Amino acid sequence: MENNLSLRDCITLASLFALMLWITKLGESVFGVSLSNMGVFPKELSGLIGIFSAPVIHGSYQHLLGNTLPVLLLGSMLIYGYPRSRWWVLSIVWIASGLGVWFFARESYHIGASGITHGVFFYLFTAGLLRRDKRSSVLLTVAFFMYGTMIWSIFPQEPGISFEYHLSGALSGFVCAVLFRRWDPKPVTKKYSWEQESADDGLDEYDPIIGDEWKLENHRKSQGS
Image (cartoon, rainbow, N blue to C red; front, side, top):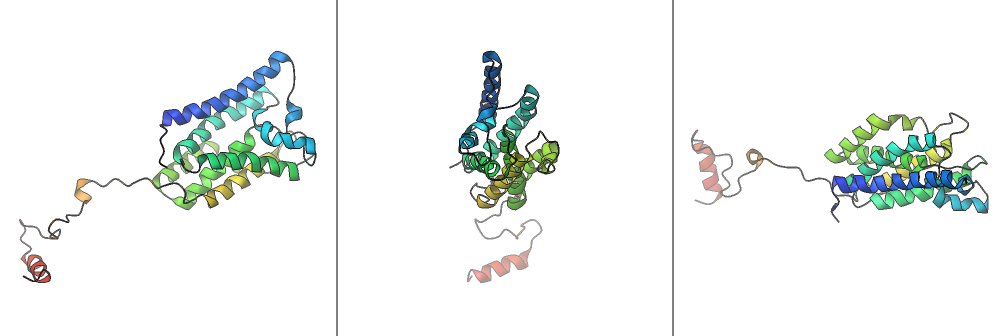
């Protein structure tokens, strides 16, 4: 299946997800409620619901602002650059990052879209290294230039930041890149007219102006003339 989405369509889809994050946070403010208890809480059955709900919940507007731009940019790059694997990657990263938190994280509610953004970043980064085609390399370069610091944020830093979500997302993105590295077709390399080989008469090395008669003679012999 080829990519039937334009870059504008891909940006629109990523923007809709970012809009959903903002609507969720604004809803908390308007109705005076907190949805933080719908995050992932490790090793508690009630905390399993957070595997599905935690990425759309944020503790503050600052937290949400910090995730909005990565969602837009990294999400757009994934959707546009990897048409066959994109939805598989997003689904696996979403669920696997939450499961990783549920099994191994500290006992607290873990929320936010940063697990997904780290997963997408590590997918783009690893896929670019493995595939080495022009498009993947460009996506790797842009992603690393803008969000290369995500490599360090998978380690413990501030107490209030869920590095476990970052690490789980990164690992799931890495695994997806290894598994799906051959799924997406590589872009066709454009050949210019001067690069095309002449196949009409098999005389691509014969220059009638210079007069490479010995090449012409070899060609005639090979044809049985």
